[in-house]
Amino acid sequence: MAGKGQSQQPAGQSEMKIWEQPWGYREGFIVAAGIVFSGLLLQLTVGNIQPSLFASPLNGIFGVLFVAGVFFAGLGGVKM
Image 1 (cartoon, rainbow, N blue to C red):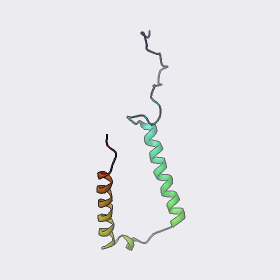
Image 2 (tube, rainbow, N blue to C red):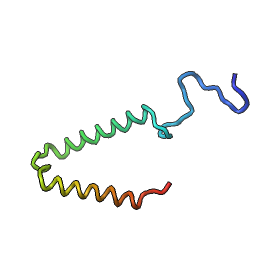
Image 3 (cartoon, rainbow, N blue to C red):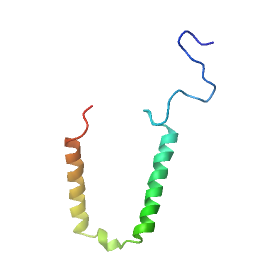
Image 4 (cartoon, rainbow, N blue to C red):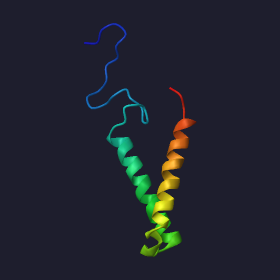
């Protein structure tokens, strides 16, 4: 029996809507499917890439650029 101000939910259903924190399995599967779909689209449009593209010094240059990008994105990030 539900008290004052409480609603009864059928078994197995929650009041949370999709994309509300904390995320559950449903959102996790959606994100994973999106990553797989993006990878397939990249493979179909770009095709195979040469492993030599990841050789030194390019991997170091891209690594430094990535870390710098993450750092500067954090400096101007959203304040909570």
